[in-house]
Image (cartoon, rainbow, N blue to C red; front, side, top):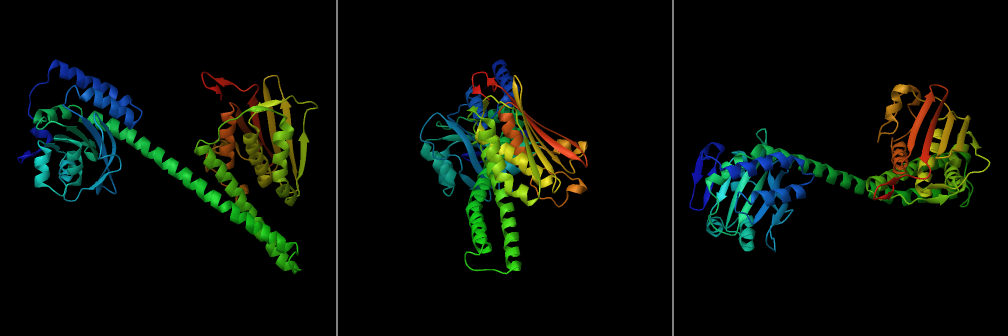
Length: 435
């Protein structure tokens, strides 16, 4: 099927003719089909196509646009051109209703515009054509991108010369269509996931940061009231304030965990290692932070430290996050009134930190869930103990950032122990310094 006007031509796959390809064209087509799937990003893929396809097509500009808003509009995402300025750039959106692009996608047709200025005279409301004409484009070939018959976008080839595209160029396209569409969709979906993850991280950091100060201020105000600075209160009123402060403390703990996660996911938790006194720079500040929760649960803390501990190479700020998470979990999930023990051991090539607590522990089959983001243990004996599954994941990421190992073991119903192994000195990545 082919629909032809003076400046516009729609060509369905069955209407491309049967002229045989030359040996040179076959070689180029084979190169594209073999290599296009190996490109890791849309930019790389477009660079490769632009350099290669220009041996088959007259082409001064190439662009990619994808369906969005449930297929109601087409949004330009990437382009490459031999000229400047480019006026129709990334982010330009065109509604499909009433557009000839709808015919391209709905009918899996290719569209040839032979003479863009003449086409614009017949379609003066086409904003995209107007912008391309201002760029100096004279003719264009638009081909659908579809996988297994499902359209998801288009590829535009444009030239500053008129009437350069023919039905034969559509025939060449059909030899590339399926393989090229699969490669484009793959990297496009990957980039969509990366963008979504970045947006999630930014929202996570923003919301957590905005919650932190108001919640801390509310806890402080409640403490002022409970301590009687604004006048004596009845015991029942103080009890209510204590509960309010406990809930606020829980919220602050969540905020801290999510801020740490946002920094980690956003790539801002860079490793800045230095030599430090580990008990003084890492352990003591972490213990101080969890001490109120420890005392509230009536637990006892034992610290088993070597008589002499040589300086440890690590990022103390990041390792404090790890220790706060491990100690906080030991308090949260440990036995009320029971013991909690921290042990430091220094070997010739590693530092070992163990955090042990009496309590319900965990079953071996649940162990793989421990260090996964947003994953929580499902054991009945742990139900009702609040947690997000964020802290251990962040700790795992930080330990691995050091080139170390975070592990856990348990005797269900009796105890649980988490251990951190840090290589000493920290390993180096070839050409990148410390891990």
